[in-house]
Image 1 (cartoon, helix red, strand yellow):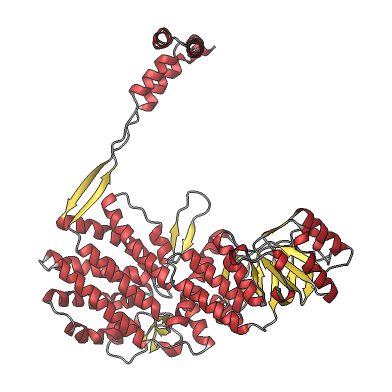
Image 2 (cartoon, one colour; image 1 turned 135 degrees about the vertical axis):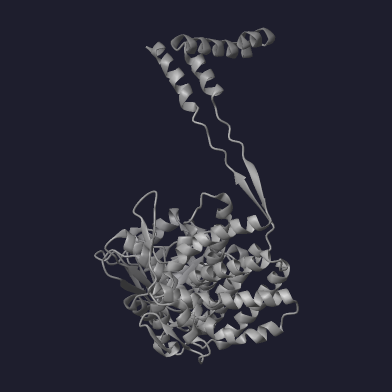
Length: 598
């Protein structure tokens, strides 16, 4: 009927034809399946529309909901604390479950059914993630401290303390404690300190030795990476010089057919971001190299057409020893990589942005390397060492760029560039019998690498919660800096909270936490309880150490989130209405009419 009405209203003949086609199609569909209209109506009448509404919780009830979520996460995470901490098994929808010992990984995996408690859980995930991002380890300690601060702080808020004053007090006190930790930190003095840091972070003597060996070999500017191995044991692979993840553009450049490599001794290096397709642009440069009989490595955006065929022909005839590769990286990062290569080889980066063209390139603008080995998908370049000062300046520039970026990905790329310029690259290839073990070992290695880097930057302090226990003696000094009585109450809960980690380590090791705590109080700096051996000793001498950054970030981040929870007066969450199972009833009606299709 609708189509017929449209037909009468349209005077133009062409749209009328379209309407007639629609009418014909509708009639054919209805004749072939008379129940089709009935089915559609049946389904649409039973369609369920889910309306999202919100629930607002006020006052103490909102804070208690947040605490319930914080407790749920903290109780799952804190069992992993210390050398005798337990593991947690994480279910996976696809693949095998994961058995992990890493606090932030466990926290991120928790999703609570109660939406109000889930908000508290996500706040605690934020604490762990922030500590992991800044220090690379100490996520479990941050979690334990946050739980303690919120538990103790909510009691004060319920009894009438000013939440804003508590927030100010926590912020001031946490900064003062962080400064105290920084003052107590000792620089790393030996390779044994590096190994001890790695052993504490991984919980394995063998894994700790592997990391220490890797750091010793690659040097201060080197980089260490963790990759999946193909064997049952862990292996270390080192690459000296600059490694570029690009290979030759044509297999005709290969010199050694057995190894499929093109190796050059003392080659000149042309570095450009331009596409080369016209051979005439390169003729003046190549003629000079033919006379000097020097090999040439071309790093260009693209080498194609006449230029590629001519260069390959000259290569095969023995006129010129040449090879071409594409530049590493993508987008804006590609320019940075090319400038790095130019600095390392002492060459000029030929780019239109500097007004340089290929026709104007001279031998003096070419870089020089000691040795280059080009494979199908990888190029290794050994520098001559003649441009050490320029390389050092370039590394400083990249470090400044790294410090001023908020992107973790950009930071990692900067570290990689520094390693390629100034040192070797070490790859730890993790071996394991099962995929579950492999994932657990990789997480431990990554934590340990971050811990070692943090320790190299900020120094080390005694581990096992001993540093926090030592800080208990600074309470009077911190209290004196507080102006408001409620700010002093915040100092009280903070100093009660920093006693929790050592007690939790003791509980996980099967000891009585309060007894261990009392024996560690009022001792000299470095004294503490070694949970691995069960002895009271100087932890600095026995190798139970933590990066100072880890302890600082744990205190600062836990106080930040705890202060936010204490000042909460309302909590807004979504209410998801349960869907009614009505669609299936409509399907029964529709299926009954399917016989008409026959």
